[in-house]
Image 1 (tube, helix red, strand yellow):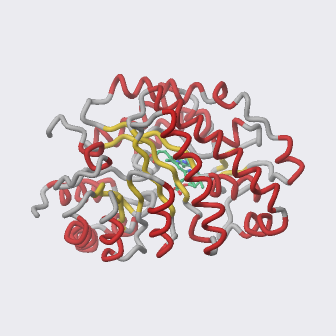
Image 2 (cartoon, rainbow, N blue to C red; image 1 turned 180 degrees about the vertical axis):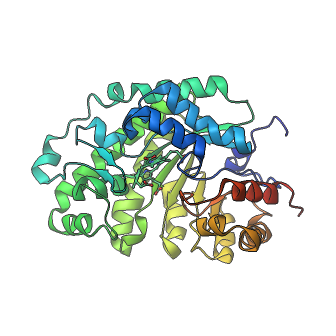
Length: 343
Ligand code: CP3
């Protein structure tokens, strides 16, 4: 492997073939070694806040597959946790927290956030000191809309109806919540960059439930605000923005958020992905179910992406996180397929 940071090259707008590869949620329950550490750690947040363990699970997929990027092991919900929203992760139920209302939003106080998240920054700096130089270290945060959906409902929902409804009924309180989350997320990403993250990703996993007007206001606006603030303080910072389910709205998203790369989920047609790639790097977009299926379905999915997007700036990834039922051997197959591809 060359000692150049391929992910950074692509984020700078260069085309690299075969493209660099990493997978969203690459540290996780599909790996037996992750499940081992997870058992030892106690709660999920304890794992996020124990730098040695968080570093260990971040490195696991790098050791196994030699991915071109490592993503910090943490969660987007550490920000509500730092805001004292009583965040818990229960087996089989996903994240839970105290649902917030307009009065609760007015009382939120982010002053202690960076203090609370100091162990995460320690993990970043341990990682940067340990990872090979050619491996890009990615930090991340959730986009304000996606984080707010969990804060309003108090748990995951299939369509984020509680947050959509709250936004219509209490637009001012909702705007205040998103602005606070944008400011705190910018501070948090800057702290990660200062601790050693080479680039960062903003996850808007629930962008796809928003109508056109709401997408502009709740996804594009706050994401642009984060990126502006980070780039003002760190002009060379590289940022990937991922708005899952945004469909054709990705054109305006690309134009307006100011990210160096945009993530594509697996529903984005590859020809449209190619159009988006004309304005800059893209990342994606294999269906995670192809990794579960393996075999021909996996090979064909990889080949189609390389065929359509391999000629431009591409970071190969899934269209969303890898799922716990994926076979680790299938990930080996995926990485080999990408790395041995010819143009
Ligand atoms: O490997 C990596 O990508 C780094 C770590 C990472 C996690 N969560 C670890 C995690 C990252 C980048 C995230 C982001 C995240 N967290 C998002 C955005 C990306 C996406 O997947 O949509 C969201 C929406 C969350 C919130 C969250 N955290 C949910 C809804 C859940 C429960 C669902 C589930 O998969 O169990 C989590 C828990 C979580 N975060 C796990 C992991 C490995 C599983 C919990 C466990 O190990 O017990």
